[in-house]
Length: 124
Image (cartoon, rainbow, N blue to C red; front, side, top):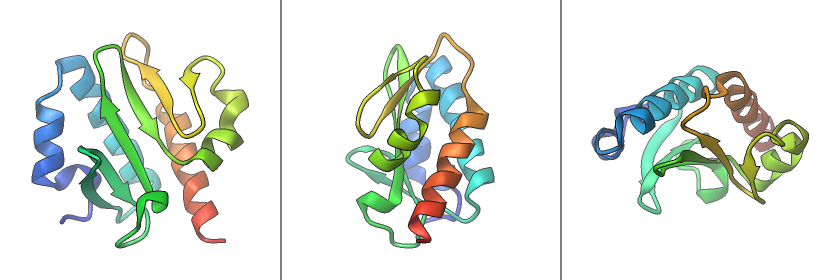
């Protein structure tokens, strides 16, 4: 297991299997997560890319992403979604997830803020 989100062979294979727009969105999100949370541990969880914000982190200490034809699903944690609900109104979101459409620019600054928020929540 590597120290960067996108360094795992399984994660790389998942991303490589995506359509070009989805692959580009994943690559942007991976870079965002790496920049916001140095030293994350990557893995596959529930058959989708995940990164543990804490070494060996369990499900509630991970961020996950999944590719779909119209969007990339981002699963930061229900507490993060709640904290950012007023900034997610332009996107479809639910208790623990948000969908970033592939036909819109990837909101990398927002994603980075969400990652940092989850990191701060885990340090409490």
